[in-house]
Length: 306
Ligand SMILES: Cc1cc2nc3c(=O)[nH]c(=O)nc-3n(C[C@H](O)[C@H](O)[C@H](O)COP(=O)(O)OP(=O)(O)OC[C@H]3O[C@@H](n4cnc5c(N)ncnc54)[C@H](O)[C@@H]3O)c2cc1C
Image 1 (spheres, rainbow, N blue to C red):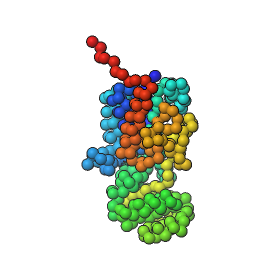
Image 2 (spheres, protein in one colour):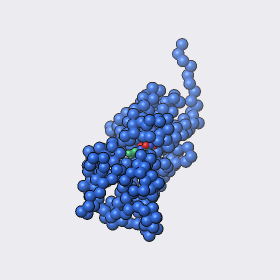
Image 3 (spheres, rainbow, N blue to C red):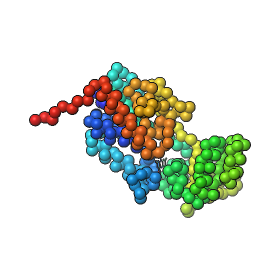
Image 4 (cartoon, helix red, strand yellow):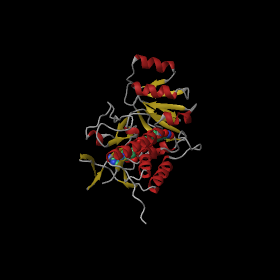
């Protein structure tokens, strides 16, 4: 029986794996390979990298660090979890893995605007499409920015970006805006241009992303979709784990869910969706798992042979 299966190999899961392996525990990371961090062309707010680091490079470093201490990393998708006496069963394809604990670090998926995968990837790589104002609002200082969204979420994102640039346009994704009088007043105070959608015909044009609304073409230095996210929490919810209205897992101060031996960390838990936060929660979860396992069975190291 393994000590821990970590589901998800993003910043949260890999940080936990590094800690767990260095606690001399048997840990296997099972990762479907769709970390949001892998889509970051260059993160510039992650501490310790003053010149920035590409998300793929950061993940590669973390994987190497986890492997160095004995963590096993597998590329696969976990299909189900089941509670059993003294642990859990993790289903991956035809295999069932027995483990004393599971850490879910499965993240979230951003809802995308209606554009092709190729265009999406190209625009993301060039910073024409951005998903995280906290991460990279600095990079659009004094630029021409659009937010694709409406309601409270769209208003908050547009107002957040307004502290970086005076040129912000809020575009309704589907048609007419759904804005309360208070939201409209706030947007007017911020001198944010409010445009009904839908936006279509997205394209890269030189250094801008272009789109068409009715008969008019618009060009922006960056477009931020504010369309919400889908939370990868189904595995835990299937076991009866508590979640928020949006589907984020609810944990205690030590990353325990309400299900015995099931822990969660990173974006799948409600919090600041950032690498630093995911890593912090991964470290807390791993230490809790270690201490919970030790409380039921003393973790005593044998003397080396000879
Ligand atoms: C474009 C973009 C730019 C960003 N820029 C920054 C930035 O500059 N700074 C910053 O701090 N943050 C940034 N972020 C946010 C950051 O990427 C996330 O906060 C971080 O990746 C969360 O880590 P995580 O480990 O919780 O989840 P993730 O990194 O998303 O990893 C979750 C992993 O779990 C896997 N998984 C899900 N379900 C299963 C399953 N059933 N079985 C197996 N594996 C599964 C997924 O495939 C994925 O690999 C950015 C995000 C985006 C989208």
